[in-house]
Amino acid sequence: MPTIIPIVRSTSASDGSILSLAELSAGAIRQASDGWHVLLRIRDVEHRLWLREPPAADAAYAAELVLDSDFEIRAHAARRLWLALNGRPAGPTFHELSPQRRQRLALALRALDARIEGNSYREIAEGLFGTRHIPERAWKSDDLRNRTIRLVQTGLDLMRGGYRELLRQARRKR
Image (cartoon, rainbow, N blue to C red; front, side, top):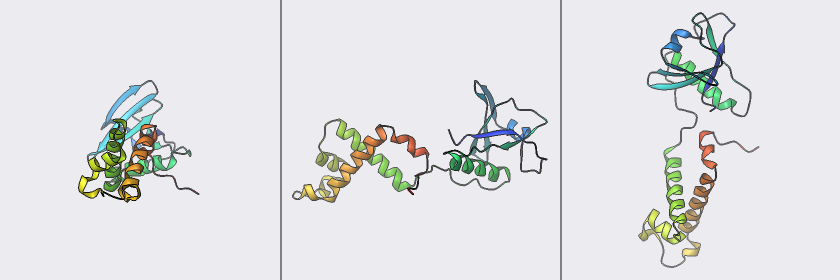
């Protein structure tokens, strides 16, 4: 998960902005097969950290940010941790969805469920938007029909693995 911040022992002198074991011990530390995991809570915000080696009392720690496709997400998580350690509000998470996006995803999943149960697009639209919004005539060219079809297609994309992209910010096409 790119929101987990890898931390390593720091070789630079501590200037107050490097994480120490004192801050780490304030969180829940557990050993796993891949290293040590820390769940650090600062002002009701969870920060997830990972160390390859066991934490040492005399060491200072810094974030290790790999320059890969998830760099932007890791940098955002590290910045939120840095803000929290310095007594400032951490701000929103990287993958926070807008209310409009949440509503559209909920509609897409409802539309997908209805389609899988064998309902027509018209029946799905009636269930999602109400029968009074569905025209008696000109259904084939109505905007709600096209919107319902797009919602079903979005639901199918989510079902086929697109839900993973919800954790990543939309990539800009260049």
